[in-house]
Length: 276
Image (cartoon, rainbow, N blue to C red; front, side):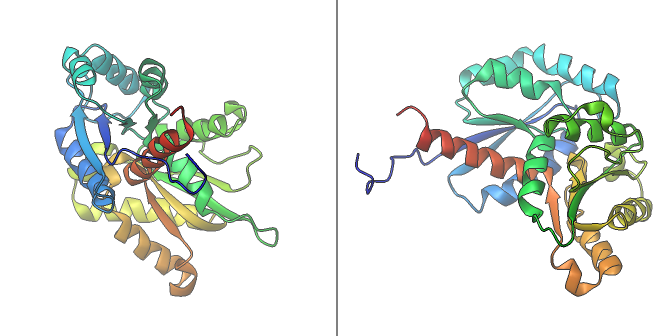
């Protein structure tokens, strides 16, 4: 093949969206977010899997993460699907430092596996410009208070820092000055589909305003798979706080959509640059 000849690529990319909690309604919500990206690229198709009980319907703490791992790896139906269906990539759709990401990456290699947490970090870093005059930042708006330290430590570890340098309040004391921190609504993931919208609006507004007041924030990451569809609400808060002109420079990242885009790139990169 000469340099003028493009590589021959398979047209299809099949992504398995793995919801490690047992809420099928949340799976449907995340599937809609994933398909909003997949429809832009006809070669990408999304399949879904929802963990069985005893995985909780909402993962809100370390115990829930552990229970969801055990529910998935011990599910014979999940193992059968992996054996019988030719997936090109797997997206673990829990916004956490979820052990299934590493577990499946090791078990399924060379198939690309990522989580919506990891994909969101990579996406945010690509969206925040490096400028010397004024430090631009990105941060995470999430659900319960547990996630503040958990996600701040996770960001530190992902960026190669010592996790303990992330403070218990979710603010960052490690060396990447672009990270503004993690700001909690005090809700859990399931609340975004169950409690009155007015309560969600109030909590989300408070958390987003705290993030925006922490510096020149140009990227807001929605730190929960169950927050899909709330981009317009967050955008309105950004406009209210920053004004219409400045708000145009702010990106709002949905983790599921970021995961689909990152996995599409990973699959295509492997096909182009991997062993032919």
